[in-house]
Amino acid sequence: MAQATIQALFLKPAKGQALVDGSALGMTMQQGYGIAGDCQGHPLSPRQVLLVRREDLDAFKLHPGDLRENIVLAGLAETEFVPGAVLHLGKSVQIRLSFHCEPCKRIAHVLGTPLKQIVGKRGILGTVVVGGALRCGDCVVAIRLLLARRRCRFRLYRITDFCTLFLRFPMVRL
Image (cartoon, rainbow, N blue to C red; front, top):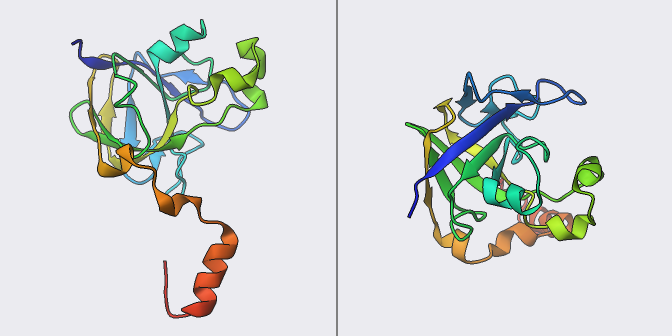
């Protein structure tokens, strides 16, 4: 079995601007923040990094960067690329995969097909658990967690459920 690697790196310096190809220079990941210099970086955001498998891009005849992803991975099995898993990239970086990125109107013109066809294939958003430097060609290892195999029941709560919780137990803090 081939080893999974990083194929391409992209950075978005500001909203509305084009992606900057960081493949030649690499990029720095900051723990709990995201990519240094990226407009999506924020300590409270579950959308710090968007990762896509190269195999999914190839299936839709797309090039790296077309889906506005940050990191393109090649050779990673679809069964290992699931929400809840932790990816070890390079020497020290760890990213926890949060949830699938839903296709939006911004990429509809790139696809040329209905957005329904790319649901679950646009990539997975994640948060940076351990920071460090990344370069193209760095190896990628996926660690599957128990949550990765089962659906997490807690992520489906609605706002009203949290309001009910606070009304019943006012001393509870999340």
